[in-house]
Each structure stands twice: as C-alpha cells, then as structure tokens.
Image 1 (cartoon, rainbow, N blue to C red):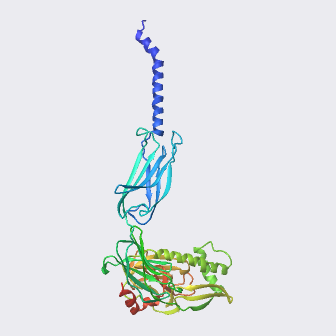
Image 2 (image 1 turned 45 degrees about the horizontal axis):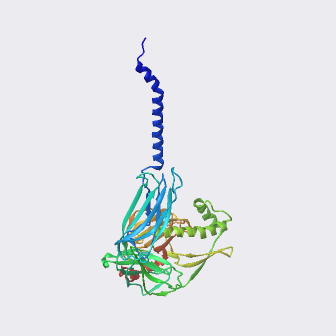
Image 3 (image 1 turned 180 degrees about the vertical axis):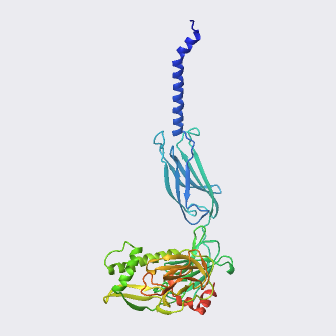
Length: 456
C-alpha cells in the first residue's frame, strides 16, 4: 500500500504545529492576564462628601478616591474661576509593582476651601477633581477620571432682623420670636443660652420671615445669650440679639414617702421592661428614678426634635376635669424609712379623676408616640406643629396609633397607674422643642391669645 507523500509531511509537522499553537495560546493568555492586571480599562472612582453648590468663608470636604485594580497613581483637586486656578490637593504615588495594586487602592483626604485666602471673589467657580490610575492603558498614561461641579462662592453672611420677641418670660414659660432673613436660610432659629430652638417659615408674614417657638427650662437662672441665628446656604452665619425680662421661677418643694408596698407593686412592672435591674428594691427604685428617667427624657427629646412645620392647633389647650395632685416643676424629695434616697423635679401636672377616666387630646395634633415609656408608663405624645407637643402618661389603655391626626377632645386613652404612678391619674405635660414648660399657661385662653396666637 502506497502512502501519500503529503501525509508524511503532515505527520512530521503535527508536533511542531501543536507546539506553535500552544505557545501562541500561552502568549494570548499571558497577554490577557497582563492587561487585565496592568492594562485594565476601569477608571478610578471619586466622591466628595460634604460637597455643596455653595462655598462660604470656609468649606470642609472629604475626598474618597479608589481604583480596585491597578491602584491610584495621582489625585488633584482644583478650584477654577475666570482663568485663575488654585490647587487644593495634589498627590502622586510611587509605583509599587506591575501587578494589581501598583498604587493605593483607596485614599481618603480632608480638604478645606477658603476662597478669600486663595484670592477668589464671590460668584461662580468650578471645583475639579482629577484621578489617574497605574493602568498601562491609554498608551501607558492610565485611566483618567474627571469630576467637575459648578459652585457658588458666597462669603457674605445674611442680614438678620428681629421683628418681634417677648418682653418678659419666666422659667418654664414659652414665647415666640419672629425674624426676617435677607436671603434663603439654611439653619436658622433662636439660641437661648446653649439651647437652640429651630425656626419655621411664616409665608403669610412675608418673604423671608420666620418664627421660632421657645420654651425656657424651669430652673433657668439668667439669660446669658439671646440671639436669632441664621446661616445662608453657604454656611455664613449671622446673629441678631434681642432682650427679654426673665422672671426666675420660685422653687416649690414636696416630700414623697416610698413604702415597701409601693416597691412591691411597681418593681415587677419595671423588671418586665428592664430585666437588667438588680440589687435591693431600694437600689432598683433609685436606678429607675434616675437612669431610666434620663433615658426616657432623651427619648422624648428625640421625638420632639422633628415637628410639623405648620400650626395644627388653635385656641387654648384643654385640661382634663379632676383634682390636681402635683404641680409643674415641684422639687420632690423621696424618703424611705424617713431617709432621703433621691431628689427629682416633676415636669408636668398630675390630675386625678375617676378610675380609668377618658383622656382627651388637649388640642388638634398628630400622634407621634404611643407606647410604654419607663417612668411615664403607657404614654401618648401629640405633635401640634411648630415645636409644640403635649404628653399624656400613666395610661391604662392607649386608643390611638402613631400617625393618627386627632382633633381636640378626641379620646387618646384611659387614665391608669402604669409607670411611676402610685394611684390612678393622668400626668400631663407641655413641651416646646423638647423642653418641658408650664401647662398652666397653655390652659389660659388670654395667655394663649396674647403670647402665642397674636404673634403666630
């Protein structure tokens, strides 16, 4: 049998051909891996935290840049205006190798912009971020990311004008300050000593007119600061001072005897909600009356930190019928076996009526809290808008869910003995931006008309 001469050639060339194909395949894979590692086309990622369309006298920014493959080669942040360029940040990184991570995979840098110090004027400018990686792509120049944003430089603070403010106010009292801001305001409100009361727009009073409801702590001794504070969108802040005549509140003292029967009746309830309680009955009571009381107060402040911007209420606030058992700001001394074991201030008014009596909403408002709250027991809190809140506690039953808009006189629950209550009653409180104030003012129709409604 004769063999075709070409078959012999094919047989002789097969190993060589296979070798060439193998080498070519390896080269292709190698080149693929090489370019995947150092010739990748993925661009760096950049983000400016705290970025704003406005820059005031100073602006703090946080730059985060990353490149997950070849790593960062350089980063530059500049501010440009009318041909003038200022470098805010410029960094280059040495190559650490030719594989993945030749440069840092992620960097975070703080940037401070001070336009006046840099010679920039008020007006439009451009904030530019340029990031380059260590990729061999783009003819060995690497991948480049450009992030540009137009900003407005504004170094002039707004003009604040106080239009109306209370002539006098007492500890635990409330009032309204009306003010005008010359430009669109960012953060604004009233600062009394170290307490800030946020403002709200009053479009019916005119453009740029705002109001802030304030409530003074019961124990305030002096007005060290009284300002309207307003910051524009660039963060420039202005203050407008005003004066008030402060009437320091007189301290009313009371003594309450804590019995073993009271401890036996109340501590199991608290243990259910706070299983971490330990120690003797008196030690547990003191912990509830102090630590849990403070935690409850922080929760109430958190709830009152956000309010409806419009006024939901109208007219004086209603008072439940019944006998007053304890007053606002009474200083209480707690005695056990005739020994002083604790002291606290009662920040509300206790009213006793029939057992499990209806508790009605003192005014129109939104239910923002309706659950158990430590020393207050079952509690309902209503947001009446513009920083005004009312609180109903020690309830035996809650009849309204959170999110419900209730009208004045609507039943929100029934009186009871939950929380730190020795007998069936309602503990009623009024709050202004989280500060407990005297409910008696809000029950007084003439006071409400003169000091609140006539201004609002």
